[in-house]
Length: 594
Image (cartoon, rainbow, N blue to C red; front, top):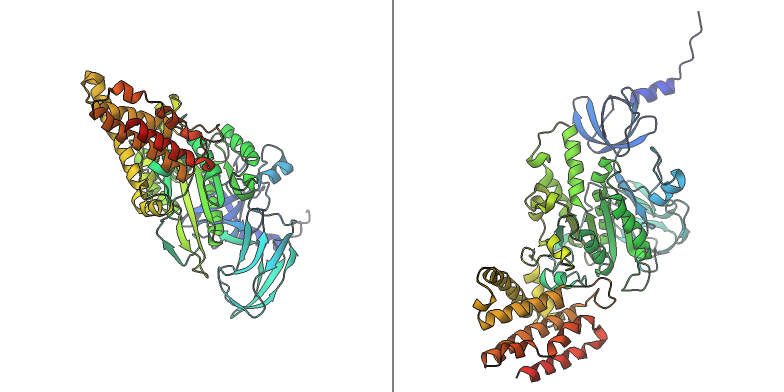
């Protein structure tokens, strides 16, 4: 009789601590025998130790969404619990990085496995070798608590990284160290009632838990984007929320790129959530080449890119927006204004729908889970202006802009409607405008901004008291034009009165000379808020003076043929150094018609 192999008691104990797979359905894995399993805990699945997250507990069965391809997994494979929720690494080195949906650095993965990610390959979100110069701002004996700044690191030439005391630590500084440090080396010791706590540059935070704040304040300052239709007609406040729905080819991604480049936020987080690979390739190749117009430095020095394309595992798509918003909250707590862009939440919702279907949950409208609205609301509610924990005088903001890709441009579909219930700015893109080469292709008749009234005070104080009135007049002209177009289609333009015909001409000037922008023209691609007011003021002044001249008996053809109209149309190519030219054109306008 053959002698039995010796039994490794440690191995037996390991197997007992692990669960075992009993079912695999795409990205969903069902396992049993996982000790002390908790919702949203991270596990390692199969021989390749694939990253997964517990999303359902049913008696002794645990449902896991796996963030990698589940091919070759089968019943009996081990599932290793980690006892910790899905978290991101926070610290110096985030800016300029390109991550996948679960914060694995894609350039590092490319070095390890080539252009296509190998299953099971992993890398830390922050480099453990890179050294950072730490400048302490507290002294031994100082009392500190969660959120207090204890040191500074010049992360990029544009951004100073502020090292904050992690959550749960309150006490006196027992030791503080400066100089060159890696993210894992100790920079401070803090004596608490539970003993001495070590602080490093690297912090961990669960992605599904919002970071605490001292309080939220109402948004009162606009996010200046340089896009005239956005800043003047449908403004977005810092700390606000906006959505950009539109059909294929209407320019959602191009608008997102323009906002990322020109918005006056200090930090940009761009999440490519389930978009086509060629679009994300454009982002990943273009962004590193872009120059920040505000500083002349590379834009990537204040940007974090999260790329999760449509051919990547669907579960990672669901996690990507939480990864992005957690990084945004980290920089917000330092006192920075952050602009987060998610392109697109439709692909994220499709990932929810697929996972929900595999869990055999009761479907809602169009197969989406019944909790779609609450998940979307929870995501957008993490935006806002806040007073930082530990230092209420330190204020930061997160502005969230999410694009939606409804099938066929149908704005009544569930993701669009659920989004519109929670956001306050709606930029409705229209493919018809895009085909007419009108960019940005935002339809001014269906779009809206609920921040416009509260921003009027800022416009009046910082730009010109006449700005709110000029905006209201221009929007009224565009509304009347849409009604007059219906009359013209039925009975012709000859049936219109003199004033109505002038309204059509003014609306045309607003469309072509103000709303339409050329992203490839160095001067037209960005317009300061001061220039936007002067441009709109000139157009509305022309409308009032032309109407007076026509009512006084001047032939309409002569009123419309005045050379000053051409000068008004060319104001989009003026710069901020040429603001005096607006006053000259206004004088010419007055002398022409009066």
